[in-house]
Length: 220
Image 1: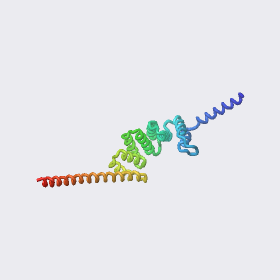
Image 2: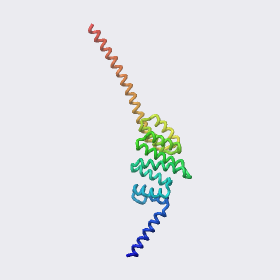
Image 3: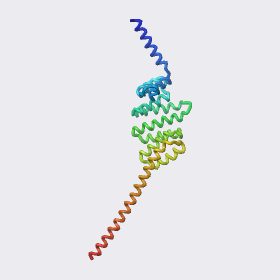
């Protein structure tokens, strides 16, 4: 019995040692697999657990910070996502390659979390920063234009779309372009309707004035 207990204790100690021997990158990879459902059933809670363990090993591991933020965003925990995106944006500065683009990705995510929290001005600022950091980053252009359309700032959205098509061409803008065309038709028809209504009103006034003059003539 004592030997069996000893063996169990040794096995437990070895498993704990094995876990602690895992690098931050290895823990991140396990979290990523649960995040996207690669070889395992997708489970964001388990993914977050691995990301947290990875960050205990390396608190500035960009991939773990960014993916953790994405997971929180998917779980609609936007305040937590906001915090992780900020940390990821800072951590991106230490990356040897494509640091500006990775920082832009984090800024774009931060903008999305601000937008979900109803802070549209801050969201627009983060999207603008992301576009400036990585002008060819389609997602930042798309999100910024989409925000402008939601705010009914259609002229600004059209200008932003023209810039996006030059700096970061993508078929994704077709949806936004369609929404702007529909809105333009609506504005044109509303404008015509307003003019037509005014003309009709003037015509009615003229007809009524003619009616009054004829009535006055008959009563003489």
